[in-house]
Image (cartoon, rainbow, N blue to C red; front, side, top):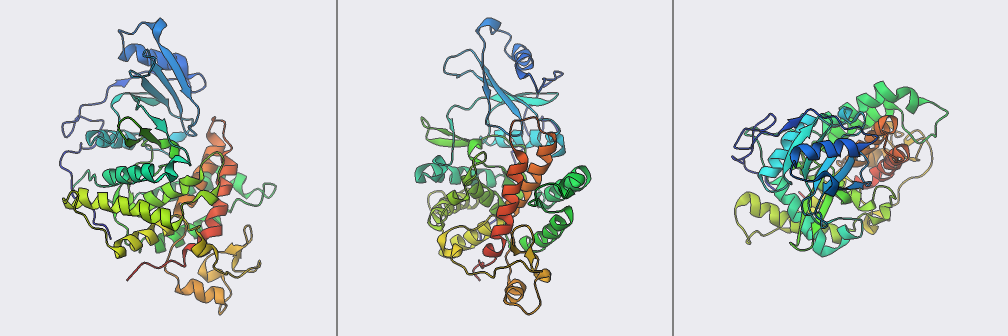
Length: 423
């Protein structure tokens, strides 16, 4: 098992900056209209780049994001001088702690893991444009690129920004999202006229309690995690042969295996989801070997001489897949009981909690003896999708996305439990 990172003395303290040698972030009293971002973005640019001639400023609106609006402002044709203005999506403060995001941005910047942060404004941030390409599902499967991603994730995980033992944010985040689903959306998700593939809040509460009880026992180290490493949040710079991560809204201390497993889930894409693209065991082991080697070098101080044992590799592999899912042929051949009876989720025809299976059945015995948890990554983003479906103004089918993630969660739940952490 990988060791927890040592404390980093150079990280800034809490607040808007100014601690630990990190300069305070300017705050502009400007609000940008989410429905028409260009006028507000150009006002910010005039404040930050007063020497730029307004007539020479070009803009580029990015449309891949499904949480915020993003526009680049620049004068150089190659965008070498570009500023990125990111406008928070409607009601995203329900999902994201913006003060924490700002602190994490500064921590990552202090360690060379984030771009320069130019200012905050009333409903967004302005920061440096990173040259390169945003990755897609094909890129993250390329061995050369995924090794760069693994090593960069290890760099982030090796940062330790306070002296106390951090607690994972996973449970706090899940409880918050589930509370929002219950209070804000329960009439919607419980409406029998809706498609019967959205579980009830009561069913979700049961699943969360079960996950918390089982996931917490896996022994995965708690590290500083990105927590939202979908393909488009990775920028590959071919000229420097490196990758950088962007968008730190969900960054925080969490289980190491969750961050990796969540990234593996994102191999399937977002707008056109295909879980057949989930990485094979062979690909995962190569990725994890690169990660562990880099992580041990960074946390144990032996550059270029960090050996990864087979037991360490197998342990992390199991932990990661219990936090995400397993979809390679080794586990897809498992024969599981079928049929819709009391032990099966009525929406998806797959097992629910151990206590719900008929006592004495083979399913009951298998569930009683299992030690592994369910794919928490799917559960988290499914709840997120339900909340976004109600509030977001971005053109994206959030409800469909939520239902896909719930379906994959319940589909893979009995499969991931077959994995055992090496003793």
